[in-house]
Image (cartoon, rainbow, N blue to C red):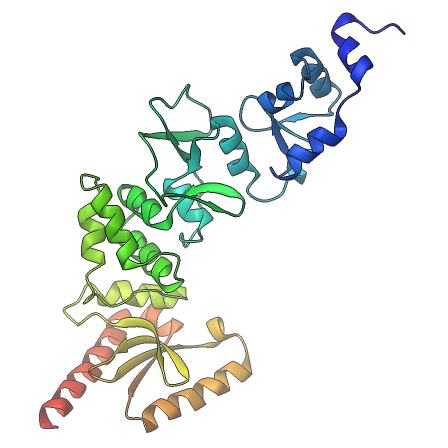
Length: 320
């Protein structure tokens, strides 16, 4: 059969499988229309490849997958967004926090990017595109083979988008994992002094504020409950000797620990918690144990137990 004119290029040259695969291999099996054209492939030949299901349109206009979209690897949507917006783009805001692992839930929204330059270009479905004149030194990184804003800039960008507790938890997680530092966040604030989140982040960076990371739903719930009272704020997830405790009032030597099969899930862990509690008490720590049932059904009683132990500790210090 004689090929029609728009197929002559493919007949003469053949589809450049190796070249296309080489580009897509580093892009989560994705390739952009502009990259295909850069290989010399005519637009009509690309269209025919889509018709034959040799290429699969994916997410954003002009982005194709080499496999069925359901077979693409994780972060394909983020990769497609970067390809669609060009080399001056970086994942930012909540998408950046998610990529750095600083959101405690999966981010379900549109992919957020910041594009450095005068204009962001046309609107693109499924994307939220922000504009910046330029990225300052160190503010555009690579993580998991994707361009992304630094953790410090992602935190500043996300302050207006998150609740106060959520941004606090993201900041504490970033500091605890050494993804950023107080100095780096303060330097970012100094470079962007008029941004909406500056005052919030500066307050959270107060060295007198105890860390607030939590690692269980009950621990998070109790921390929020405590903050509604006049009790002093505890530190969270701190080491005492060889043990890491849930909530801690260091000066008063008071600890709150969670208990129960629902979270621990094994008899061995339950037994080890008894050893842990005895060790803490033998080293002069007051221990309040809280179960998930008590927190669910008797939150006021839990607060009374903690307040009583704190009051007893204060009295002991005065007598001391």
